[in-house]
Image 1 (cartoon, rainbow, N blue to C red):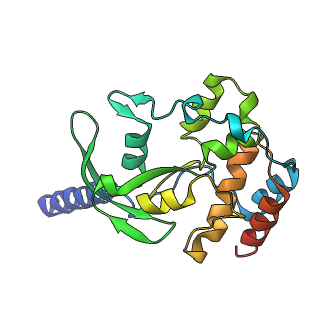
Image 2 (image 1 turned 180 degrees about the horizontal axis):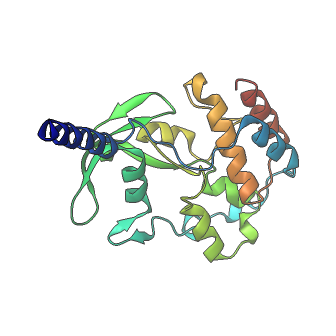
Length: 209
């Protein structure tokens, strides 16, 4: 009886470990607020016209810095948000799968996935980041503690470009709520301004929550 119990216990432990290692089908970045919190944060943001667009340069936001060992920011997000991700000695993903919440697609090649800045770097520059130090802009571009970095389909990320929610929204309307809450949370954390049209679009998207 004791032997049967021991075998049963070992089997349960193995199954539990397998579940942990398998991970979720699609992880999400941390720090997505509740709808009520996002609504309060949106109300607290300063509304102003964008400025300094002509002086933007992507190099002013050093990104994909080393996070741990051989892993840079992109590789860290691929491991965080993918399922069954295997990496080589250089931390490059050699296999796994990634679900893109913007369009609902699933990819098995890391090369098909971009890491999107929820609030694009150019958008941040025009909304107040032009006054930051380079070190602060680096922190923003590699922010793993807020819902700023998302693993998404590469051409969807490219179609978004540096557009705010008044000019671009994910094709999946079911994701509007989360998208709006994530965008607001990032702008609130980094005390960035927003345009009137941007606030109207975000308010509308929160209405889907």
